[in-house]
Length: 202
Image (tube, rainbow, N blue to C red; front, side, top):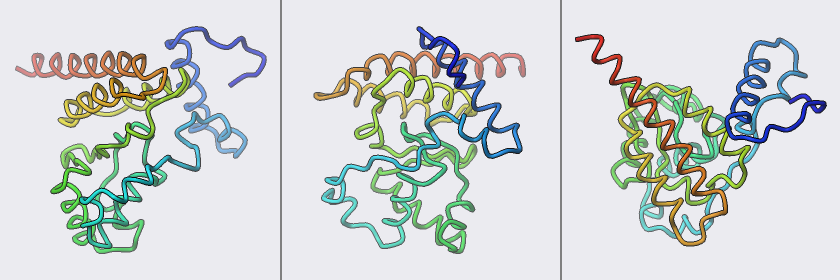
């Protein structure tokens, strides 16, 4: 973002700046522009160390455990845990056969650690918001941009339930309720857009 500009005072203003910065970074052929990317490009993700004590995690096969770590922290992941990632890309990350990656993903789904929408290649890491609930308006705006760019998925309903659960949990960060309201607004708009397209198709 331009350091000479006054910082935006609203969430909508932040969203606009993040979209502008992200678009510039994608359209530029030079490395300098990559610095303008929003914070989804951070080289780290938070992981709850106590999650390894979860019986579901302890019971995973080695391959499923490695895939879970990748979905929690990989370059395609997001802080809110909802993102697009094809099974073939998961397989390529570990140099696995696609069938092996699919079996590992199905193992994660069986114990409800991950949900996957095959029609849109959308992944939902179920407990991601427990450790990465946004803690600033900039983080909320970045998440909003990412969700706006997703195609409609049946996982939106589950995602909304997770948002409500973790935003209202004891010890949730200061901006949790603001994040909840922003995400629900985006999800309702996405559902409205889908319903509108469905009505026009009839």
